[in-house]
Length: 459
Image (cartoon, rainbow, N blue to C red; front, side):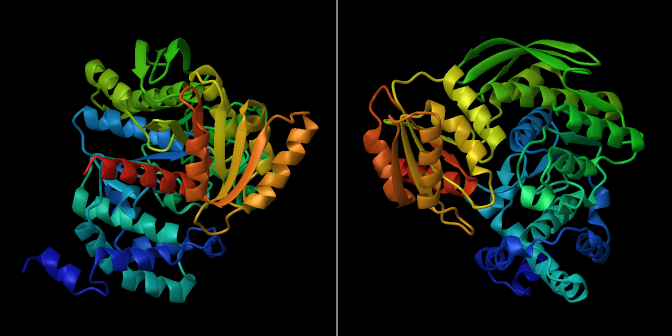
């Protein structure tokens, strides 16, 4: 029997499913305890595996996943091995941890969880129970450091930055995509407070790439970078982009940066916000080229930027009828989604289904969405702290009355599968259906449609 088999079979869990069930039992938001003392102790017990890895740390309110997708695709396309840690997952827990775009194998996941469980239990006795996200962060670090051995790790924050479990690392470069109104119950009730938390990923002497825009947010990021003696590359100042053309599934732009210009970059992801995300990724890659001699051939770069995809973000999951899914779940995300729907897609009527968690700014979200929809279906995700469909409908009707719109049909259907079937029936050939809100709903809808399609094909 191999060493790997011994380590798997002798651990507390016999299957990956058992191991994952143990991890996700600590999901409840009440279990989130800001602070790094549990992570520091776990790293100490594991002999500091994070020190073996080269991280690209990505924080922000929106766009983190897309920037991670661009970075992963380009670095992999240039011949390097790249690990990626993102959250939440769309269909399976294993998606959180990937090597070269491939999910961690069940055998490796089981091996790592069996190794760390006794240590997690020990730390729970000393400092209180680590959260699901903390445990997942430890799994990723241990897997990358002692099983996968990637050249680089693209490392997405969970919640915030300063006290986020991912902040245990010192990266090669820090990235802050943007700052908006999200997780305000944990990060603070003003943009300045949220910015201070996100800027907490900035490390001494480590360069920072950012697309933050609001003056008060820019000030905080600038002050933090200066205090840490970190060079800041800010969109609109050290780098910029210019849109060349926009059509569905292909946008092109011109990138101008501190070190060089790239005249004609094409991407397949939709929405004007993806141009910004792509520019942030390009500036990050330029920093890696200049500071750490990352070898990037232009042919590989352009091919990878075009190939990059991120499931659940303006993803067309059905053509008959046309159904688009997008994980916008806060006001800034809704603004980007609304802009994309108006600028990129053509349709006669827009039918919109949404489901949310309770800890979101539903009013801000709906103010961007309601002006463009013809039908609104309110549903509920199969998840903790889901917002009641009836409550969302009441809010939507109130906001519609405020703006004098009486032509929008508002439908309450708490069961999302029933709501999805109703959405399909409403959507004519020239219409567009959109499902948006929490990624937990998006993941279920995506999986359901995908598996229905595969079943119809006999796969």
